Image (cartoon, rainbow, N blue to C red; front, top):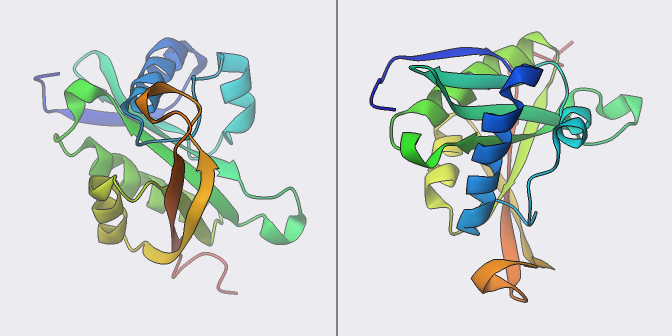
Amino acid sequence: MNDHVVSLRPMQAGDANPVLAIYQAGIDTGHATFEAQAPDWPTFDAKYLPDCRLVAVAGDAVAGWVGLTPVSSRAVYRGVAEHSIYIAPEARGMGIGRTLLAALVAQSEQAGFWTLQTSIFPENEASIRLHADYGFRVVGKRERIAQMTYGPMAGQWRDTTIMERRSAIAGQD
């Protein structure tokens, strides 16, 4: 990933292996999600909305991904989504997270999403700063919301920081 030229494109089924490997690498840090293992592709594909699902490509390799999941099936929440963003370990610090998040914000507004939200472990300070830089604000903290089920932190209760971004464009009519 020494090639710092990064391009974005919609995520495709052919990206399954690198996307799921990047997801698993994030899981393995213990600071990305409560999930213990990346799902198989059909489960992943069904979870993330087809719109606003992007991969960042550096050289010939997928270096990161971002995707949206609905927060509810109720029609009144059609413009509210939770997002996930994961960067390959070897691509961290290259600005790929910024590139992906900026594109996600723009695409989500064009798609009519008026609120993006995310839940971040407080120890993941880099992700909290990144989100703050793109207009996300802390709206709360969930204390001892769940226990880790894997790795060296198995059995430990974790807090999460809840952040959201309200669009100045979408949902204002």
